[in-house]
Every structure is written in structure tokens, then in C-alpha cells.
Image (cartoon, rainbow, N blue to C red):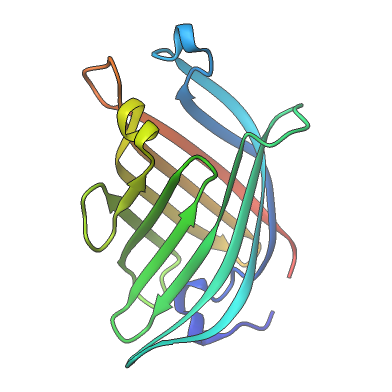
Length: 190
């Protein structure tokens, strides 16, 4: 398989990936029981396409435009979507992942990652000026995201795995709720 080395740890990602063994651990969807935990299996599709070179004055980024859609097993409509970018800065070995789910939120997660890494962790924290989280007034009041942690593993050229945790400060709950997702996806096209 051909790949663009300028993408560093993202070099093998361009293409379409699907997985049907996802697990979502989230607050219940029902208002009367939203403090309770609900675990749902899901299937997912991720699409990555090259953005080309992006220049910020003397910084050069290479990256991928991406889209993720997830459906609960046996449900026709998606319960989650994201659009965004994964960008690689080879000079500083910083990997950026910026994305927006359609819930009134934007996240810029990042971290230092070696160019040949097959595993990495990206993080964002509310209030950070570099890797941060921006939320709508409703989310700040009801489900404030205080931290986001994303763990990624490229298992081989055709298999990826991720786990992520969104730490939520929910209205009426003293402790944080650890909303987590994980899935293993395989390449369906390059």
C-alpha cells in the first residue's frame, strides 16, 4: 500500500474504515434516569481524505479531513456524528485532532507523537488555551465536558482501535461521569 510519509503517524489512515463491535457507556437518554449508566453496542464508519499541505506562516501541517458516523446496533438512524481534521506538524512532532459533534461543542485535542508511532494519546481540557473544549451554554450547564482523552492504536495496515473518555460534570451529580467509547475498525477501501 502506498502512503504519504509527510503524514507521519497518520500515513496509513486515508480511506474508509468500518467496525461493528463498538461499546458506548453513557448517561441514560431518558430524562428521568439520565444519572444512570447505559451501555450500547454500536457500528461505525470513519472516512479519512487528504487535505494536502497547510501552511501557517513558518509552520507546515499535513493532514486528513475526516467524518465519523455511529449507529446503535439494529437502529437505522445515527446516534453520533463528527466532522473535523487530524493534522500532523512534523517539525514539533505534534498531532492535532479538531472535531465537532452536532451537539454544540468543538474540541481540539493534541499531543506529542513520534512520526512512526502506531499508538498515541491525545487530550483536551476545558479552559486550556492550546488543547481545549468549547461548549454551548446548555452543555456547560447540564453536561460540562471537563476533559477528553483519546487513545489510538494502528494494529496493522488494515485494523485500527480506539478508546476515548469524555469526563462530564453533570448537573445534580457530585462526581464526574466517565462517558466512554471504544471500537475496532477495519479498512474497507483505500
